[in-house]
Image (tube, rainbow, N blue to C red; front, top):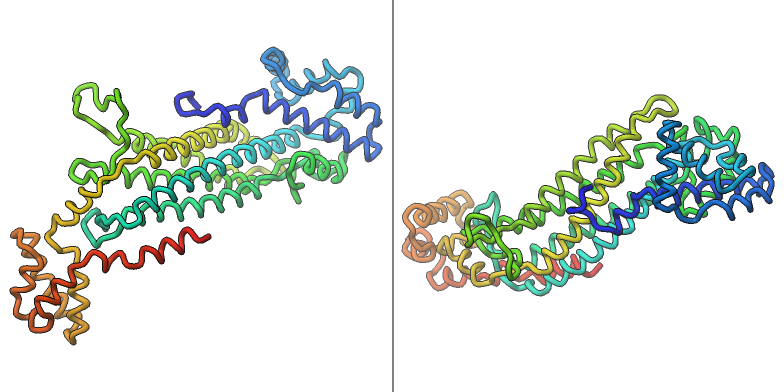
Length: 436
């Protein structure tokens, strides 16, 4: 991923230096296990663990790349470089293993490392959403359906809704992390012919993974499909929040606005512009993360016990999707934390339709007085249309409608135009969302 949309901690997971450390650990742990099984001498396993480098310098990486340029095989290039440190005992390294044992187990480690960072990001976002939800819990604003004024809600309910959505995303990511955290050290076509299952169990335990129950020559890719699909859902939730902010920041609405810092510029041509650039950026980044989902799903179907059609895909989507999502979550945290809200504009917008937002309450009140729902709907709608088409005041029109006042007195009509009626269960909703 380009540096503009990348954070160092997530990037480092996908750097060659980290990858080679994981490869080294897989090989060393496998040797330790094989020594316990009597497959290789204990003295050789000790020497391998002592001499295999703990870290890999830029110079090491250059050397491995040069070897790979000749061998055209990344794992063999790595093993050749490792042997230059270990000496004669290197003949026991990779005993009975296949390249996929190293590559797939390493990818599992990297994806769990990435998942842990993303879970930390989500926890920070949840804290921020909760804070903003309680700050704006009782702040009335217009609820909209189809983009059109519907009935009153509160700004706090918007934040609470997003909080609940990311609580679900957290559970999804925990499940995806659990599913991807498997280890395969089963050899060619996964039969353990030259490496007993106990070696796999030992390596898995050392790496914080679980043994893959049946791996063929690769870990089954439905696990990876679930992982990237989960990242795609999280990205869509980011876009959900970003889209809401973009709409709320429109000039005609302006109920909320991205923080505009001193010295910030909105347009090279128009000095007055203050644009929702972060929200728009998050919308675009969400598309990038979701673009990994379809290739991950297509990777599930591999030939027989193994092919490498999945390999090139994962070398790109694994770093790109995790790095992009990590950046997007952290950008969203800042955006939500600094979001400016305008309660006065919320009230002003709510009053734009001169009380039409209370139409359902009038409808229900009429039915309670014995009028059929069809007739009640007709009475309310004919007065509502005067507001839309002639700019009339809804309450005034209702008071002048003899068919309405025959059932509901003018004083009672006024009492039905009460915002608090629509927000009376906000505390109950908040208890449901935040008690857990």
